[in-house]
Amino acid sequence: MSLSTDPMPADGDSGASRKMLRLFIGVVVFIALYTGLWFLAARQAENYVTRLLAVAGADGLSGQCAGLKVSGYPFRIGLFCDNVKLDDVSIGASFTSGALRSAAQIYNPGHSVIELDAPAEFRMTPDLAVTANWDRLRASLRAGLSSISRFSSESDNLAVNLSLLTIGETGRLTAAHGEFHARQNGTALDVAASLDKPVLTIGGQPLTASAVSVDMTLADKAGLMNYDMALPDGIDQDAGTLNRVAVDLGNGMTGDLSGPFTVDGDGLVSGEFTLAMTNLEGWRQALAALLPDDRDTIDNVMNAIKALSGQKDRASVKLTARKGTVFLTLIPLFVIPPL
Image (tube, rainbow, N blue to C red; front, side, top):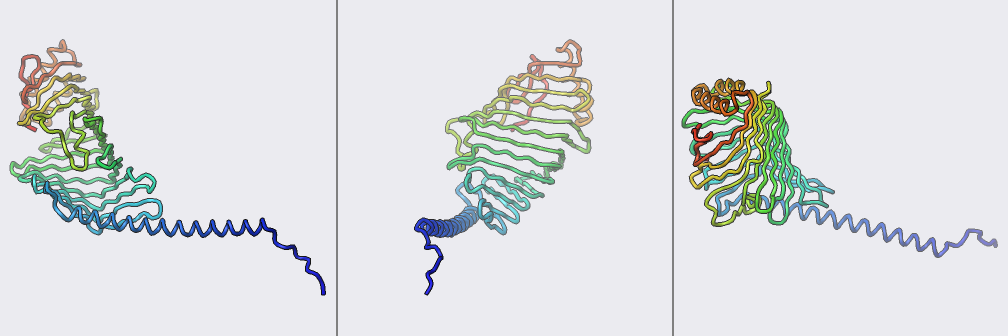
């Protein structure tokens, strides 16, 4: 009988194997638990959104997310809809669009990315109808437990048609690229928007620009980004500041407007503004072509601005708005319709 020459397993090797086995089992258990929790959360999110949209709230807002499903496993969770419909019976408004896709990382659920497919339509009784198309619309938001702190969106090849049915007025706006941003700033709301190569068409006459941008702060409006959209009580007028409204029509035609403003309960605007313009004659011709019925008013406004600028083709003047009427010094220029 011969003795075996195979070495006996060392205690260290046996301990390492047991540790590897326990680690493997732990990983399998974790994956199983994680998978179960993910699908449970997905099912609860799907049921919650379905119930939320199906029942009109106290404010009359309800909606529909057709073909709703939740996906994104393992590292994301997102909602997908074949099309979207929202109704607000309190103001007689409705919105419809194509497919919606949203996604958030599991480790950062407060940051979501959203894509919305065209076309979209917005209607408000009695006569407002807006339709929109785009090649790509992508948005992102950062949300907490009670509100959205930031929202941004961008779109390419945007085309918007507006109709006022009862009076037969129509308009069309196109842009190569558009952006919109909003954020809470204490109790105020900061809003900014921009359009690249926009074309505004009214009555068949187009007005083309190189770029248009708006940057404003709305006082006491941060609550609009709360989930309940609650605003402070006791405020009988809206207020804010136009940080800058900039228009570049090309060919040296630029315009900048800034200043504080208020809007009273009747929708009438008051405020103190600074207006800077270049190539005044170019502006005169562009506006007169766009609004031929208002040519006399346009001529009066441009003549007054040019006179205050010393007959130069560049001007910086102060405008005052009082309950919708805009004045240049003591000269009434035009009326802003109620908002």
